[in-house]
Length: 143
Image 1 (cartoon, rainbow, N blue to C red):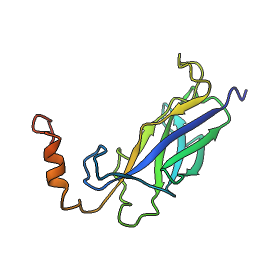
Image 2: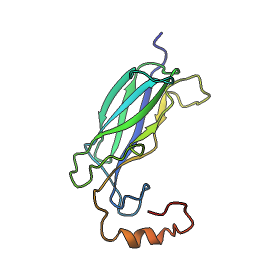
Image 3: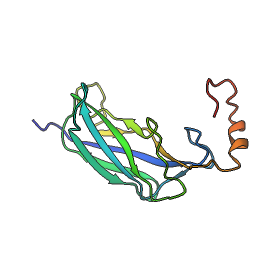
């Protein structure tokens, strides 16, 4: 049973401050490769792997042709064309997407993934001042 299809869409950006969120110096990454990876809840081999490349605004679209109710599906960063911003951090390199119609989401097959980021190896020198402007002093872990 193939079931309905889905379109997974989202955006990839460069986090030049290694902040873990977008700042005014973040920029979208054109030509980045992302993959949708679905695996069973109880572990085991991937059931689906589909790739896409981001457009000029950093957006990607991946068509998935079946329901994956019994699996955890995530969009995962694969490759950045920008050598200055190509670092991938484990657990921050993915966004989970529900690929089933049986979960109460009424989106006619479109699934929006949270933005995901590549990081610069070394933060830009102006990042200290930029992050101070966000006033993160009360945050449990200030970068």
